[in-house]
Length: 322
Image 1 (tube, rainbow, N blue to C red):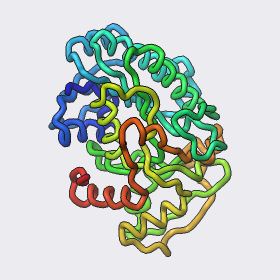
Image 2: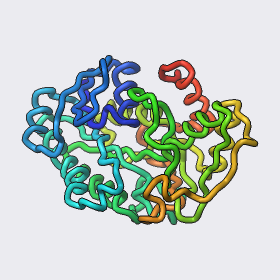
Image 3: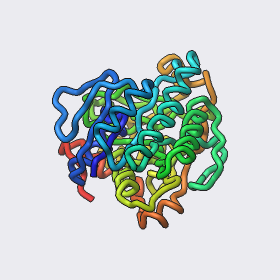
Image 4: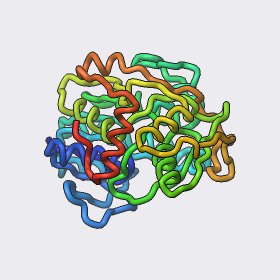
């Protein structure tokens, strides 16, 4: 398989690249905008502005992929709200451009999306639950989903949720904790291993409940979508369990053999993120995987198993076995 992966140097994207190329032997090509890692074993790169429709069409035509996985995002909430036009073009515009490119190449388009397309009052939302986002990021992802599904002849949406795991191309996380679950487990493990206490944010105005996933397992589900010609529509890439922030923190301590007594609860630090309190955040984004199970014949792992795999990946520097 030939896979064209946008955002391949990002957190989830680096797992897509690694799973596709190393586990499944795919030929992977990644357009990159700024960050080009030193040495890129397993995939090729080119500098490309995804907002340049003509350049995107030419790039995809030249690589001639079987699948396009669109995981690139504008990962800056302040920039989204400051420049709404840039935000729309970065999410919806690039999806529309890649949908055209996919059809020209007779490739499947897979858009990586998020549980934040839901409003936080729809616990256990499944793949057919109507989205109802409460912030601009969720709106942009919802609009991108519809654009992918309506514009490309063969399209799928892969929603990820509360992602933990390895960033295979960077040595450090961009932040410690935010209004979602991103990097929460990594930050807890790093702090406690260093002998430092960790205060878990808990409040009504942040994402308190979700269905945790492992980035490499999300990538495996996306591979299954790519490999199955009939797999189109919406899929949920998450674990089988829904948990709260503190419950996840305690489970991480158990799995990583860390002292749970070093955990505490605290209100969010709005100054540290510049985000909490500035825009709405969905409270409960727990997901169900009914359609994903049926279409892909896939049984999602529980949260403890996903954390155990994360520990293996962190200690070995390689993908955990399946």
